[in-house]
Image (cartoon, rainbow, N blue to C red; front, side, top):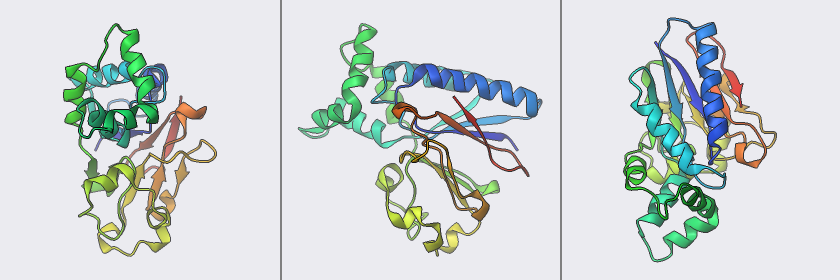
Length: 232
């Protein structure tokens, strides 16, 4: 079984993302040499930070490498970006700009592009909303799930939820979630460290506020070992 490295919200922090990838590769070679590994990015690659275009370039290049198994999930900021650049509604573009899209557009303009490239739009359009690792009972998603409806949640829940019912794992009564851990981002932790409820096999939040002065975090899931973290 591969070692899974789950990476939280990036928000345009391209240099730190590349540094975190380097740290992951170094750690894997040191601790798990010879074992396969998988990268799972939880979304929100764009907006607010200075180099969203560079982040998307990095992710596309990473997924193109034959030696790396890389999964990239969609976040709510990718959803807003797509709605904006594709003019889904008359106000979608303006709504995206005020939620971090202005910095994203600036990152494209720095590279001499006046609009988001079709290559990037096509990549964003193909991003899945959830990744489920059945054998280890791990659910990877950007924002969270609806503990009552899972696995029949609406897609918007995976991208946007911040309900107290999701955050309070003691209220989860759905038998479909028994023994499962949900790994998510979307809601920055107060202290910029992961919120870890792994002991109860319930919920781990790895949005540690990279774009707000916090950390960019990767959680390490290795078989028969406690969850560990790498920070950049």
